[in-house]
Length: 524
Image (cartoon, rainbow, N blue to C red):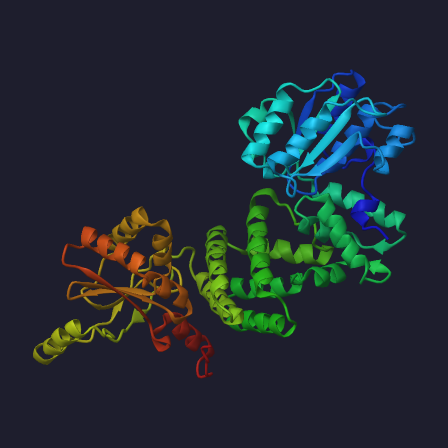
């Protein structure tokens, strides 16, 4: 049995979902017999580019067209549908992208069609052609035979040379709206005589990113495992999505500053085998929806009536500035998922930060804590000087509140560890100097756990979970950039030491200890 997206591929312009502007223009050209020699159909995947190209090829050659639509019954239409008429050819430029492939078309296009009015060449993914192939294609578009018609389709029109674009009529295929996808899914399920719930179709539409083909592929997968009824729960399980109940519980915990509720929800998701990457993506989207509700009072379409009530309650409870801050926190934390195997620990730490973030309206207003640091310099030259200094002039114990920096990640505070503190302005100047030399190297500094200066050395430390950052900054090329930036900002005699921070010195871990009190915490 054919896949749904092939079985229900539109056969006339009237069956195409969405794309009304494009369809109207093409039908008018056919009715007025003003067909151009070259067309470019661009747009995201699964929006109907190839389907419309095939319909247009049949409509141009149909012996009995009906208001711009092909009849699909005449000899020419049947030959094109059965792929037995070689006057219409479909070429995949992803695998036929050489000069020789296009030259073969150039040789064949000179011969008139055998049965149809026009020879039609549908070139899919045309942006994959080589430079030489584009030059060969350009020659055909400059001086095309009167019986030739070229339809180019692409998802990346920006890669097509301007000389090709200027010789083609361009039509952009837009992403389909969720309601358009839901309507088509309803029609297909009724044809298939399958029962469904409205929330299931809304979830499929939201997950397909405006692609009709993607939505049909998802539906095909779900029909094979769902039994008689397609409902929201089966769709979520099939797609590996997190149930809204789990997200609701986590958001409730964040809004009420209930760390235990958040941790219980994470543990339940872990035991149920949920994907934490998808859970985090779902939380980011959900907080975005909460924020948007404050402006447009629009409830996400995939929610049930009961879920919608919960959503509205949470949207009214969340502060606007807190929502912005939490979205930014989760988005930044999402990046660290790429570099860790234990995503559960990262998720726990991240959401505990979100719970604390709710204590104030902004990052800067959050309560600060006193930080104590133990010197861990290992360089022999510095060590000998430090030992002498400690004997003659013992360093007094200092407890000072570290001023938070909104640009730092991986820490709750911008920690001043020992020696003369470096002020935030100087640190920002240092980061800017590094970024001017290497954007990638500068980005790594945004996750610094703590900084300090001593004996003309700038110490940069990372928490244990940021081992990748530590490794990258210790490479010869990146360390040279850090040294150059230090000399520019701090002085010629300065050096940079990058090292890791012991787990017991991590303020995030200390935060967890405060939440769980005497409960032992293992760092994996």
